[in-house]
Image (cartoon, rainbow, N blue to C red; front, side, top):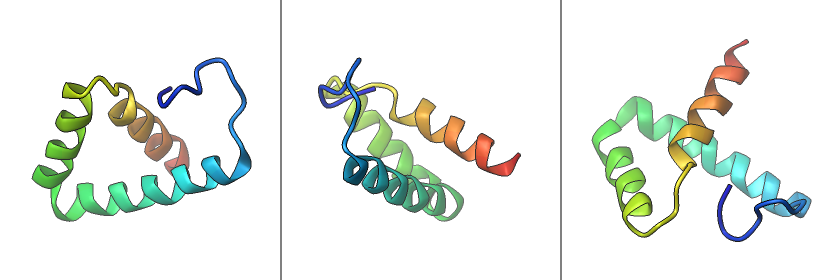
Length: 64
């Protein structure tokens, strides 16, 4: 997705850190959606894409 990991396997610590951040962003989405939107937009403006989509996929798959 991002940070140079395209096509490479990520270390387990990176995967776990990403999951923790996703849980935090899920809480932010429920409590402070406008702040989370700023986070997504600032990353997109800086050239980091796919965080929003990855979060949505993670949240949808965890509900099933």
